Length: 203
Image (cartoon, rainbow, N blue to C red; front, side, top):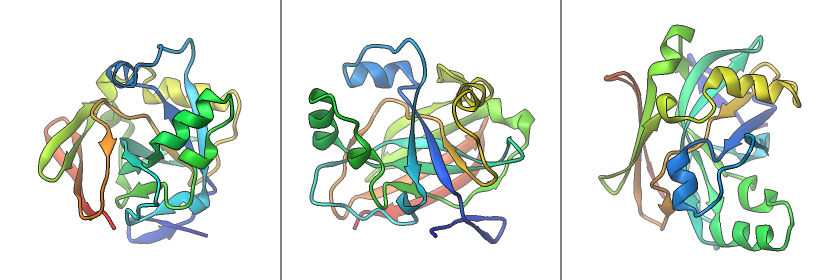
């Protein structure tokens, strides 16, 4: 099984539970309608990766605040990138098909290391994503339609959150297509305190 890093240990998540369309401005940039309820989808363990390896299809980045779970509680946070095969996703949606092939393929969930986070600090988390040294995404819990506590309640209505599952909380506006050689830099802040900084070179 694929693993993530948390406190110098390898952790093997069973699954990744993802929130889609959780930021209003991102919904607008994709010209979608605001849904009546939270959109939830999953990625398998095989989607977990440490590097960004492109497929032949056009691939879009989506930077996300990502949480590590234990005993139904958030114990860790990381910068995550939800990779999306953009044209394939649009084609599948137009045909009325599910779009796991465009969202849950091998290597589609890229993470920095996870670090411990206290419940009292979660509300002040935000991310920044830079593409080739240009700030492209900037947003956090304050802008989420469904804040982490409410999001977990929504998920628990349908899915069991197992120890070491990962929750990806949606992406702010500013998504774009990646190409080989791009430099990606993800940062997680708690207020103005930098918690995580991770750079990737797209392969």
